Image 1: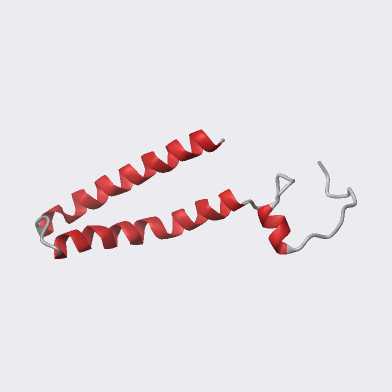
Image 2: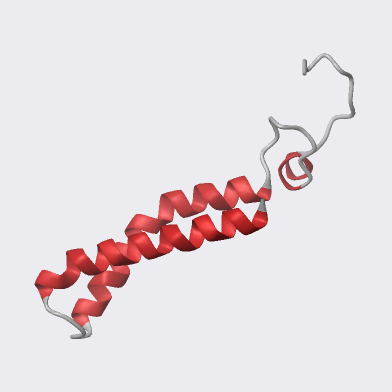
Length: 84
């Protein structure tokens, strides 16, 4: 659909929160981007905190991170499946 169709001007908040068009960002797209940006650094931090707390040896940090990453992706894909 072309963008030649006249419509009222909306604020940035209205465009993002109440998207009515395929090109408009939605709250879900913002949350997806936030997860994409923060998941790896956050999971690395969680894995390191577990090591610092003495829950496992230093050699287990990478496998713990990998497990957390896979688990978070499973949860996110399940949420996406339910939400759409």
